[in-house]
Amino acid sequence: MGLVGERDQGGIVVAAAWSESADAAAAEIARQLAPHDLSGLVVFVSPDYDVAVFAAEIARRFGATPVIGCTTAGEITPEGWSEGAVVAVGFLRRHFAFLARPILDLTNFHVEAGRELTKQLRADLVALRPGFPARGLFGLLLVDGLCRREEAVVTAIQMALDEIPMVGGSAGDGLRFEHTFVIHGGKAHTDAAVLALAATDLPFKTFRVDNYEPTAIKMVVTEADIEKRIVKELNAEPAAKEYARVCGILDDALDAFSFASHPVLVSVGGEHFVRSIQRVNPDGSLSFFCAIDEGLVFTAARRRDPMESLTRVFADMENELGDVDVYLGFDCVLRRLAAEREQTAQPMSKLYRAKRVVGFNTYGEQYTSMHVNQTFTGVAIGRRRTVAS
Image (tube, rainbow, N blue to C red):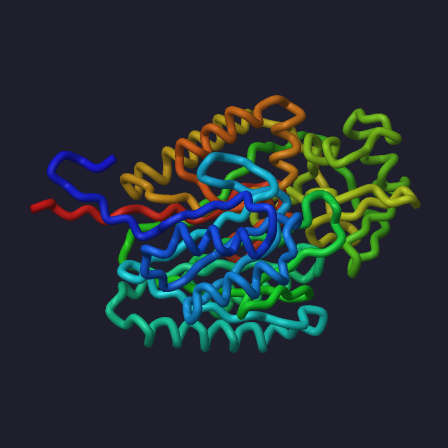
């Protein structure tokens, strides 16, 4: 709501579809956004759809407008949390310049190549809209959620972005963990990422929040397959068995809900970040969503009230930006599973709806130079108010 005598100047439009087929979903998104002149479009697509068909159809319908996106482990729509939907976030040309580039073949990704791509994209964007504020840039990074290369990609890109903030998420596949895709150029890609840069004359701020704090309980990674992000031993004991013992869970009851409710933390630069477990393997090892290493010290986490953490971050954003038009959010799927188990999903979804949060549930989150887990990251985009005549 704007103030009396003022007119709100928002820069974001949002569409959502729950259509039966991928081509019908693309048509519905295009219908909803047809009245708007967009410089870029970001789409979050349920894995229930044929993502290759959707990518081709949405690109055809939007022509020269850059369209990027990814598959999800759940969607955050204007109505709150959902599944089986497509969410589209459009950037209005009058307030945004928007460019994107794919990063293919992540298996053979080289840091220098990532830095050069980012530098060129940054230069191209500045040339496209030279009148926008020099500090009015932010990055969005979407990555194949099963590629296990997020850390290298994030580090390379942030080195080239310097002070420009970046957020994003790793693509999901529900809870199947089979195939995840990013979208660019009318195609669905695996083993790939897509980086977008946006320049704007609107106020914005990136954010990160979780709802866990460290305890005094430690676990040391004593054997691991680093390349595959698999921990074989904790404290010189079989990993799943030791994790279950420390967390007070029956080891034969370990599942996604257990991992969502009992994450572990690592300390980086004096701050604690969540390292989430993806699954327990038949041999009793644990697969993780983030990079791990032998000798790494895990700290068992204690859960805080998630509603309190969310309310605080929304208040901080609004104190700084004023009226927030949209929160573009990347919310770990394990946060959603924990909320469902602990019966806080409905109030959290209602809060997201009230605060105009849109985005998707991820297999991991990007925040500046970090790839993190069980976290809610994103960018709050404000409004520019002008006096109405």
